[in-house]
Length: 203
Length: 271
Image 1 (cartoon, rainbow over the protein chains, first blue to last red):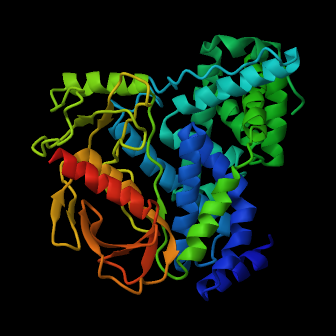
Image 2: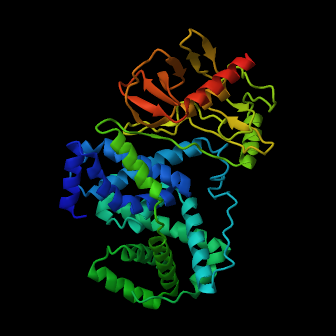
Image 3: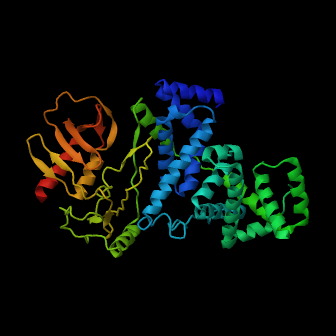
């Protein structure tokens, strides 16, 4: 959607045309869902959070002023919804055993069946799974900012606006998140080989 | 000194991946990477992670758009509410949760077939006899999610469930489970529900779509549910039409008139 189309859709929704919300959901559901998925670490919670984010966006659409991109405004809502949820989940961590253990690792016994995968794909799958686990091990603020960058593709400036942060903080927090994630992956047996065998790329 | 320098270059590596470098910085980084194997390795690692993250996108379930648009269309102009999915735990987790709660000294009932009319004196933490996944309770009322407000909808909610064929009891805890639902019938009868039944009522009377106001409210029940206020519930054929005291509009309940009847009969047979 172009910015004009987005603003037009927003205007129509505010004028009472609920159906005009549909193209906005269509345009952003994949990014919103994936952000929620990587924030929460599981598909059920991700669906809940993505739904809530869209509903919250719909309900507070009148506060969208159009001085930032709709996507940036929306991702800020998604982030807030997910962080609220994660805080609440931590609050009941003692009983929420299927999701996150005390060390932040997913304790659910989900063992993907990787027997059928060819080797290259298996390696990719292992890397992907390790990265997902690593993400869950990051502090919430680092995970959030890294995802806004990597999944939503926001620029530093947009992230600073979405999270009300200084540009310098954005830069250093993303860096710390990457460093921590890599440290996690290196400590995680599966991936060290991938890393050490990776050839240096042309910059 | 070298470490400090490398640290600076590592930040550049991160910014490089994000397309946030000036041409000069880029050149300087390139020169450093050519002479520093450690930083070159870090660059490789950072970009591998970055590639993985950027390519690891999943298709959202169709339910996402359907649910959002369903809720939005049903409530044009009003604050939209979504029914909150309950947190589902495995039977194992429910067992462990019991241990955790138990060792924390919170009031717990052990699982027993006779525990139907749960005392409301336990202010926190209850177990109800499991057996049916639909009988485990939410912290009643919290499953109606208010969106648009500043409050977190997830605050006090917690539910653990056990499946029908496990020995593990369902665990229900949260501040609101201690408040029983009160049901006044059209014949002037008045019943108080235990925590289990309160939760089932809450499920039964969940929003399932908009409805026109019933033509005849003579057979109306009045149900007060913790956190949801007082509902007027009118059987209409096999359907149940509900109206909250905080809203003018009527809605269709998730459960049927027969569901309500059997729940009330169960309550009567216990009391």
